[in-house]
Image (cartoon, rainbow, N blue to C red; front, side):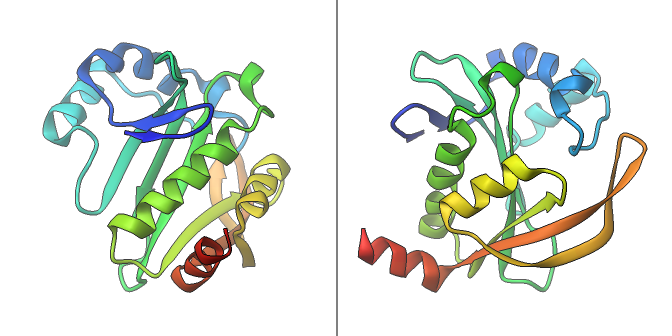
Length: 179
């Protein structure tokens, strides 16, 4: 478990599947930018039974408060096979919890974890150009804007241009030495 000031990042447990299923299937909770697909309870349980949502190439975790209430999810996966990188995504489920710093704290904890435990050189984020809040999270944590992929992601009937943000291991190491 990764422990922060206001939240924890932890593995998904079998008893979490009911709550996770509720949020995964709440299309409005996905917002305007995350792909919106419905997942059956059977598929969710099958995916969990296969590997607990953690494999060599991808992992999904829950973001919870210190009381154990689920706030959101954070995940990492190898998106480009020949890059020495992991791409990260995150979501705070309840809109009433947006803007409270949870995504920022979760991304800080999670990218530290990735650099400390994985032999990677880059942690990357792909953020819809209209998703100003998520871009602010990336900048607060210290990620650098590297470019824009035009019409790269489809969500809710619309193609979105996607900004690429990244942090290199040497940048992370330098930040660690300064703090």
